[in-house]
Length: 231
Image (cartoon, rainbow, N blue to C red; front, side, top):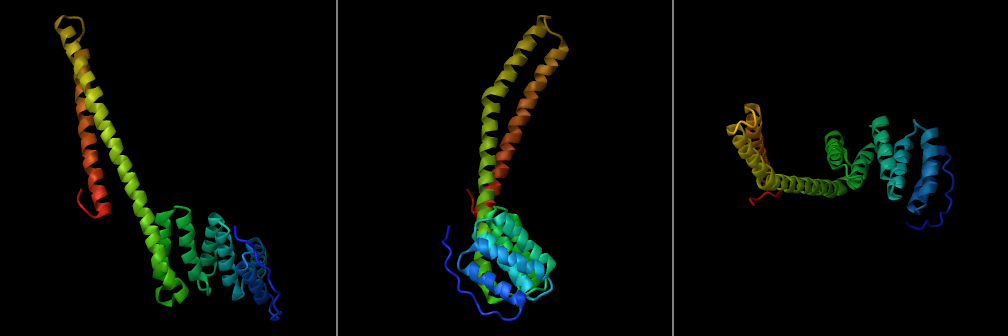
């Protein structure tokens, strides 16, 4: 964790909300995240109608995010966006909500956050956000692609395992059971229902084999789509 730096007290502006935000900013910039959280929480609570409310809430979320508390940060960013969508830092909060969701591995939600950011604030985004958004979106998509690829590979491996088990164990065993049932039926030792049941086991095993093979083809197609090339 970063070590907090000493903070020099500012001269009062005569505006308690402004003073509270600036004090919180100085603490945050000095990496005293706990101190910043305390001041910014109090400021936002006392002055919900002040212009600095949006700033205080956004910076409060960043203080938690920088401290490694992405869950709390995400809640604060979302609250700031919902409660003050026209606030000066509402767009920033929506951006940092996406960043928080990336850290939480909620990649589809991160992408949705960035989509909404561009849809709602597009042309009015300040340069700070405009410059960072492409990289954040790329990171979210990259992590999401890797996650989807890993899932597809796992599903492919599972389908291959199912095919192997069905081909080498279940189907041969079903065929042996049927042969035994057929011999027993011909000798009058088992009834026709038992023979039908043995035949049904062979059919079920063959269907399971076909399903496993079809699943493999689907997973391969999915992997090719994700990679953008034929395998």
